[in-house]
Image 1: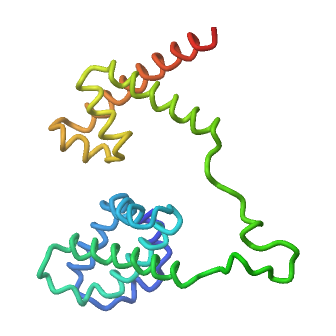
Image 2: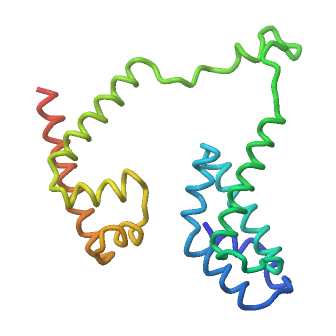
Amino acid sequence: MATIALQAIPELSRIQCDERPQQELIHLITSHSLRFRRIALAHLGNLDDAEDAVQDALLSALTHVGQFRGRAKMSTWLTSIVINSARMKIRQRARVQLALDETNGQDCTLGEMISDKRPGPEEIYRNQELRETLAHAISRLSPTLSRTFQLRDVHGLSIRETASLLGVPPGTVKARLARARAKLKERIGKRKRKGLR
């Protein structure tokens, strides 16, 4: 996503600033783009809005990199820009208000036209059953595989972040993930087959 954002900014070559901060910023954007997206997503709860907020923040940072004073780390500066961009998106949302009791010249109100997006009882039960099945399967994994799977697939950390937390090389994380996923697939498949009989 970050490289796409960089390619989509034709003004990048025209930005007049010191070369070193610009290179450091570009490195941060490419290496931390998923982290920035997770931060924006945590604030906004919507992937499309989060990606828009990150792209706005990166454009702003690239445009104003000359104003970076170095009082904090550049990653901290860029993170605060991402957070502020997400907050701006939230403010923009608050400005758009619809009166659900207005008819707009139609026979029914806008509130009646909007469908209920909440899950039905069957979907709630199916999701609960799936969570229980997955939790049971994860509990039967070895502690090493379970911890690796939870950090990467449940908490959404990158391979590099997971490897750093566990103190192992990234290749080891990939191997553990493959084994954990294969065992989970096998155990969930067995449990499904038992449930169908």
